[in-house]
Image 1 (cartoon, one colour):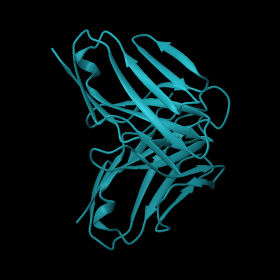
Image 2 (cartoon, each protein chain N blue to C red):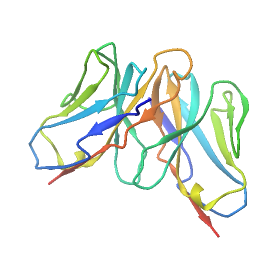
Image 3 (tube, each protein chain N blue to C red):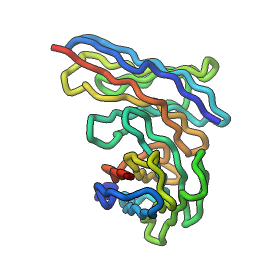
Image 4 (cartoon, each protein chain N blue to C red):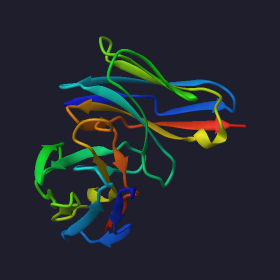
Amino acid sequence: ETGVTQSPTHLIKTRGQQVTLRCSSQSGHNTVSWYQQALGQGPQFIFQYYREEENGRGNFPPRFSGLQFPNYSSELNVNALELDDSALYLCASSRDRGSGANVLTFGAGSRLTVL
Amino acid sequence: GQSLEQPSEVTAVEGAIVQINCTYQTSGFYGLSWYQQHDGGAPTFLSYNALDGLEETGRFSSFLSRSDSYGYLLLQELQMKDSASYFCAVDNFNKFYFGSGTKLNVKP
């Protein structure tokens, strides 16, 4: 089974710009969660998508938004980029129920640098 | 909200046993997970405890006490490849909130 794939792997933006990050979930997974991981810190929950709807959100401003598509892939959009948005953005997929519902499978991440 | 506390760094020698503790406060709780992350890598799942007690998976074991809002990860027969960061994460109704991580340094 294919794992979680994210693109791009690295990108550099300037303050005020907008960025879109993409994620393909693992086969058989219908739930996608996005995390922000600053250097030396743990992953911080941004939001989760299930059945193409936002299904929970962490402490992130509205300029962080997302989408989930019928094939369960997902996008994370960040508007009006700030320097503090520089981080590794991780996508994780999971099942909504049954065996494996409590296991997150992470992609390798997209490293965003904001200058 | 959620808050999780775990030691920032632990050092141990090859072959030893190490315990990484995690205390948490959360508004909702299904269970406690542990993830391993090597430098430059993605977090990978190690264990999940929904009920009180010890779960063993090979060299790794994880413990949960729901009444104490406390858990730990026990790593036995440490190997150099175990050098990594370890994160506890609370399952708040299928949304996972992570601690800041414990960096484990295994020395020969």
